[in-house]
Length: 198
Image (tube, rainbow, N blue to C red; front, top):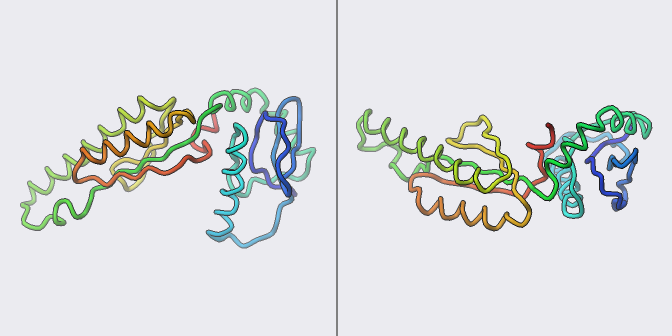
C-alpha cells in the first residue's frame, strides 16, 4: 500500500521518503503507507509534508489516509480522473487557501450582564450581521471563497493568489480593528483543500 500526499503537474522530484508516480503529465506524490495510531502529531506531520510540497509547486492536496494498493493503482487513479485533476490544478494554480473565522468576543458584552433579553438578542444580531459583512470584502480579494458550517459567526475558506496573501491578511487586520465585539482569526496559507475538487 502507498499513501498519496498530493497530485501535481510539476515534474520535479520530491524529497525522500516521498517519490513520484507519473502518468502523462500528472504526478502522484506518495510514500509507503505506514501502520500508525491516529494522533494529532501524526496528522500534523502529514500536513507539514503537504505544506512543504506546496512551497515548491502547485498541487492538489490529498486528505490524510488516502491509500492505493500500488503504483499501478495510483496511475489508474490519475488516468481515470485526468481531465478533472487537470481542471482542478488549473483552478488552484498560483494560489493558496486562507481560513477566516469570526466569533463573538465574549469580553465585548460582559456575557450579557445588565442587558435585557431584547438587548442581548439585538447585540447578538448585530454581531452576526457584522460577521456576515466581513465576508464580502474578503471574497472580493480572493479568486474563490467557500462559507463553511461551524459554530462561529463566520467560518470561510478563501483561494488567494500567492502574491495577494499579505494584502488579504492586512484587510483582515483592518476589519478586526473596525468590528468591535468580534474576534477574527486568519490562518494559513494552507494547501487548497477546500478548492481541490471541481
